Length: 495
Image (cartoon, rainbow, N blue to C red):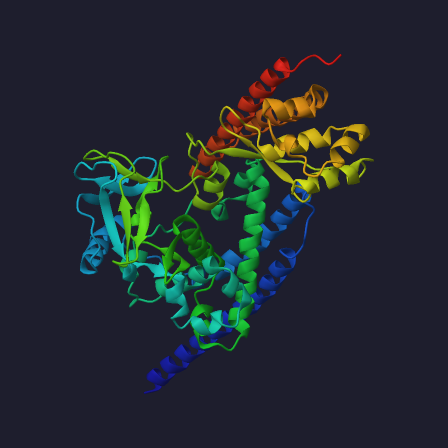
């Protein structure tokens, strides 16, 4: 009897010790979450990327501390690798009347999983259908136990993607979830910038994606800190279920899942953010949108964007998006991207004596608050907005007065011959020379950073994507330089 009592006492002491340890860890996390919330609330000047980078390093240092402490609280990863869960996933699809005859899940080099044709498909033929009941949507979240939190939280009310992220976390931790077969075949981590190290992020420079990546990382870190405080201080029942599983690692997984797989469908005449199982395993290729929602049959339908042969991977078109967008939100780069663009940060200096007149003229064209302009891939790399900016930026006082006296200076946004004549060769020569010099300087900056990057060891998936992104951006710059040189050669000589 004595031994048993001693054993019980020892177990009780161990339990108390463990509880005390957890309480202490929670206190440390609360302090770190508050610190993270303060750091992510700091506003840095858009023009000072150096300050943004220093702030990011401070944010990442706090995140590293949080990841170490939270490691025991992460949702335990499933024992089965993804491919061992496919059979159960397909069974679930069949039981719930999804149709995908002639389509199977396969592994493809450079893609991991995708969909493969097991028979020939003609362009426009129906590939697969997914009933609405299989889709995991924000509407499901609003009808779940999470609804009480959604009803009082302004962030969830205005950002459905965040709502879907939290709902996904709850469902992932629920062994009886209807969507468990779907969740079990999701990747365990992603190639989004939320998984990049500071060293990898630094290699993005001088790409515009560097600044965008810092903003995105900062935003997700702020969301984590905000929800950590809410979850551990609010008296809402569902938040009790989130307390043990809401970690930064779990949250970035859920956010990355939403960023890479979300789709908008129209339910009850409203756009709803959703996951569409099976369909979301299709990888991207240029083409046209060939998916739709059939309201009469309450299902998503996917049609072949081109002919697919037996054994070939089936692709869909994600939409007209730049590589920076795909890189940041989907974790890949598409080299043959016809819709690729490069963002240039441009503005009127506060020390420019003609600043107010230039801003007034830009305002007439709806460009007063614009700070970034695009260069595009292809034969016409300069957007209408960029053309207007460089013209106005390079005008003298007399020229500004002339154009300011007009109602709507539409000729400034046009490269048509009649508009070019109206603007004048003198203005255009200054404008195009200015942009050419700017593009050449930016192009040269890629050479320096690429040389530095080559010394950073083996290529991870992240580094491969960074390298590919920058190669695509250099192509845009070189295309723009060639175009600008050609335009300048054709301009009449100013007497």
